[in-house]
Image (cartoon, rainbow, N blue to C red; front, side, top):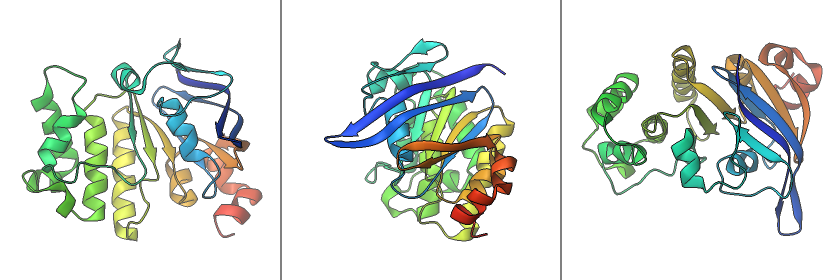
Amino acid sequence: MEEILSVQGINVYYGAIHAIKDVSLTVNEGEIVTLIGANGAGKSTTLQTISGLLRSKTGDILFCGQSIAHVPSHKIVERGIAQVPEGRRIFLQMTVQENLEMGAFTRSGGVEKDLERVYALFPRLLERKKQIAGTLSGGEQQMLAMGRALMSHPKLMMLDEPSMGLAPILVEQVFTIIRQLHEEGTTILLVEQNAQMALSVADRAYVMETGKITLQGTGAELAQSDQVKKAYLGG
């Protein structure tokens, strides 16, 4: 499998706080790679650094073999990385369809076909395409955020805490869609506090603690790890 993302020894600071400490990770084409860890471990900060919203003091980030460490965030989207942010961040005053169309702002043409694909994946959004996004339920807003990211035709989709605040039945739905996207060939980097669900879909996984990667392996290996069971799976 070809390496699509390589994060090499990044260090990120919030003022005097050293938030990310020498983090390195890779994602291969077609994989789901998950990053698990407690709240505040540095998972979201890692995604924000990859997507250009934060900058590392050291190291490099390669995407499809090219450095993106100093590329502006909107140009990173154009290159093929889409992030579904924590908290969804949809445009609350716009309709569902207008939100989806905003996801395709870096592209020209082919938008109708992509809308059809998103509506096929998320039939609930088709039913509500003219509805104001702010009136949707939490689960529907999460589906909309994922659909909007897909509209940019990403080579890599980064999901930040997609199950946060959702009822268990909706969490199941979101992870069913993640599996479906994976089967269709979408490469996914998933940050998730629900370690059990995350490891169940992951090809490979990394554990983050206080800004460092402390464990890595296949999803199955980490799901069986005593250390992971004790810390994250309630075992």
